[in-house]
Length: 349
Ligand code: TXA
Ligand code: MG
Image: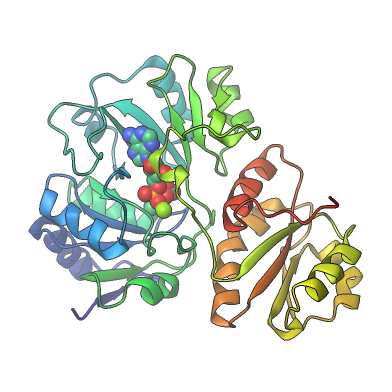
């Protein structure tokens, strides 16, 4: 299949917009930009189209998709009731990077929701996808537009690297502002529960609706099954082996590991905050990437997946990357890092 490219990075062309809307309604699958990461969308009313998403991404069929809406009216067709707490969250955070899990209407596709009685919904904050949803009166279900298991795409080029030739179209809407996937909050449980942390933090949400919890699978060391089916899969991982390191306190440990594993130093990468950069010079790797300043974690999060993907392009075999305190945004940053590293911390035994 020859993938069609639409360039909306500068302006939204009305003719292309109509072309895209018609294609979605015909059952085509097209990747679109959002403020978090790029999504791979299909019409929620077309099971055949939705199946194309699972096939193109090589996604397990037990992993449900998020529905994307452009206006609040569209919400009513999808859910049984809109709980009071959902109304508060919608007021505070939509459009924006928050997915809310509701009890779904009976007529909603089981293919999209992997047979669950619930559905995750969000209203993205990006002019390109908003125009499509509103002008076409479409609800699009979409996972991130990557091959399952690789870091989510934050540029058109990332989508193209993974999915060119496998999908009908890709829309370029520039670089994603947030850089990691939306926060997911489940409102079907007794106490509202965060299933996936994102750039809207637990503290942000508690300001709007009071006490909430993290899903047990996100905290502690106990092995529990994640309530968001997708969270159980190895995720967001580059090809290289990833080591999480403390803030430049364990340079000796890094050197020991490099020697022990006989690593090729030219194929090692160091990803660190600017404040600590020169402390790593003794390691001697030519590949250093900046996470920006420790005082601006949003920058690090925005660039994390791009840096991991750049490491793959350079053929990096081992990555050492600095961790962060696990509170607020730091909790979300560390959640993605743990997944990229498969839990691999470089620590004194
Ligand atoms: O920012 C985002 O959320 C991006 C953009 C494209 O909107 N989308 C995204 O989708 O990250 P995906 O498919 O890569 O991740 C969706 C996650 C999965 O872990 C899935 O298991 C969970 O949401 N999920 C979806 N529906 C659910 C439901 N009804 N109950 C529990 N978890 C659900
Ligand atoms: Mg994904």
